[in-house]
Amino acid sequence: MTQPLYYLDHAATTPLAPEVLEAMMPYLTTVYGNPSSKHQAGQQAMNALDQARDTVAGILGCTAAEIVFTGSGSEGDNLAIKGVAQTHLRDHGSAHVIISAIEHHAGLHAAESLERSGITVTILPVDANGLVSAADLESAMRPDTALVSIMYANNEIGTIQSIPTLAAVAKARKVPFHTDGVQAAGLLPIGVAALGVDLLTMTAHKFYGPKGTGVNYVRRGVACTPQIHGGAQERRRRAGTENIAGIVGFAAALAHAEAKRVTEVARLTPLRDALIAGILGELPGIRLTGHPSERLANNASFVIDGIDGDSLLILLDQRGICASSGSACTSGSLEPSHVLDAIGAIGNDEQAALRLSLGRGSDARTVEHAIASVVQVVQLLRAAA
Ligand SMILES: *Cc1c(COP(=O)(O)O)cnc(C)c1O
View 1 (tube, rainbow, N blue to C red):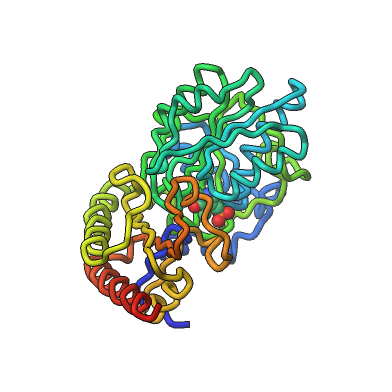
View 2 (cartoon, rainbow, N blue to C red):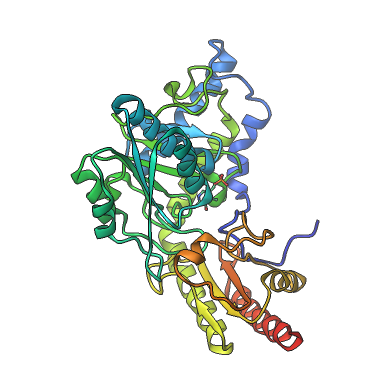
């Protein structure tokens, strides 16, 4: 397969950074021991695991014991939401979970699955920019609320929530607060103390690490029922032989992303703004989705009137542009996005959603080509309608 020329889908996944692959290589080849083994091959793997855990804990500002390695962001969201709610149900006889209407399907569907075991779920609305209101959260709180889970930054529209403000509402009632920080890692500060969160979920493949490796921060004292039973790995919070290469890759990718974060955000922000201004300036019948300023530095997302989303993506692909209609998980299905629905962006007429997400490989040329191609393709499709 040839390399796509203009990869503008970094919210779906990112390429593996060469230095991350390099850090992983020994653990894909010569260092193959099981960290649970007491012999030297096992202990070599255990040392790598300990070191990776220390690196991640150092970046989050927590202790190594508060890090749980998982198999993905989806698993992390499930572990946090189901795990905390199930513990509360077991200990108190009832449980209530509060989430937002724009959570990733991993969070949304995990919460909805709890309803089958008698746990109540409140889904908070968002405003037209995708923000959750602290007052809404406050009034949704109940005596049996077990967990609040609100994502840090949205994967479709890029809106960034004020997590410290929302987490403070939960903290005042001693209710644990979880945030899906998958899109935030590498672009926003993730120190858990400043955020005020009790649980935080990340996945390596969204910041130039390998697919299939996640981390949950679980604050000491927050009880979280395991979702995978078996061995005693991860202090009995997640069974399964550790994916050492993936975990080493996670730590390397997070360290690199964190070291580059401030300069990369400063580089991406004007590129994003040029992309948004260029597209909005040249096309009628198109609107920006998500917050105008409180948005991820790499996210440009739109709804476009009078065209079909799939045709748009196909024609962009023919021009070397890898874009998304919003969420990679729902594009291809005809279901309208729950996020665009929640912000009231979906009308009755035919509309396409378009998400362009920039990354390390994007530059001014990428933006120029993307603007020209989107304008050309939309005009073409409208003329043919
Ligand atoms: C990608 C993503 C996930 C899922 O992570 P996986 O590792 O792909 O399972 C969860 N939440 C958000 C916000 C995401 O963007």
